[in-house]
Image 1 (cartoon, rainbow, N blue to C red):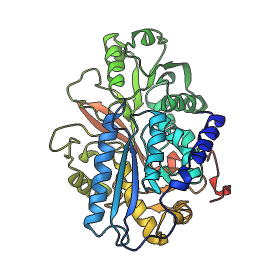
Image 2 (cartoon, helix red, strand yellow):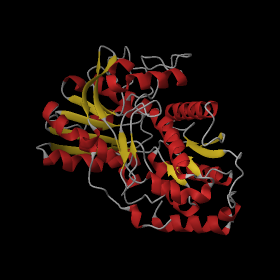
Image 3 (cartoon, rainbow, N blue to C red):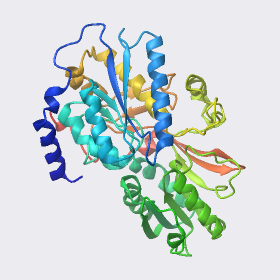
Image 4 (cartoon, rainbow, N blue to C red):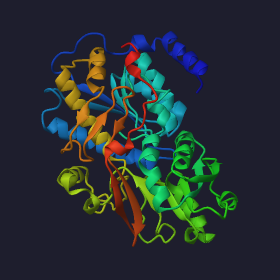
Length: 417
């Protein structure tokens, strides 16, 4: 959505009385719940992420309520499906705000996140989108938007030098043509070239593509590293076709962990030997020892085995991503209690508290230490390189959070509240 259409949409909201219909306007009684909204991708192209984000956030809310809630108040969770569609997701955001959510945990889909950002500022809702396109905490963001998980730029920043030194210098980049993929297509080439890499080509593939042969046939035979960004099932189709063409034996296949997150990777020869930049290990035995007890407790509460499967069904987790919602809920508890927040009218206090907040690993934060940068509200945390070996994802390198830091693209502190 361009700037003009955003302004037109927001004016439409105002004309329709959306702001006037928001339920906050006077401080709540002590027993009124803390209302959190979840804008989640239950249907569409990212249902595995939506399934796990909902399950984890619901588990976090149950845990807090069993422990007495937030500041003695019950936590009430409202859920709206985005259908992994920007327009539907934007409407879901409005519905959550109208239903009383002054704090909203957002979509994994970058397009939905980007479409919802202006609403957070207009409606004064504290918004934690999970989309990863760098622009979300860059030129498209605002003072009410915070991201506790990584950005695309952080992925590229942390891994580009390692990848050139360990996988090869001549690269072809192939991405799905949507916000997340396009953000990768912009981020990686200048960093790779700065450390001696050469980007031979960047191919953008329509998101609805199921036949990847025409695109893989264009791969320059000089390629040493094929970097790919596709969601879920399409990633498996892409790699399967690459295997049929014999490309997996000719070059290193390196991608984002979203390629295989939520997928059972065991026994699939098309994935063997492939490399991924990841945010957290799927397997408990690959988690660093200093946070393993926290991750084990988290898994027990949400019903996940040490191997990374849903205990009841054997379904694969989105193990590199599903911790996002758990940690956001626990951060919100800390923010509400430390600021004395009583209603969405106090959201400016939450914003000021969250700007620059430091987070220590613990049962509420099993992924590890991190911090939310004050300028652009972007979090920085440890990253990993994983490789599929013997049918299992195994960590071959861990990067400290400091290595992911890049120059901020914005400073929201200049904006009013």
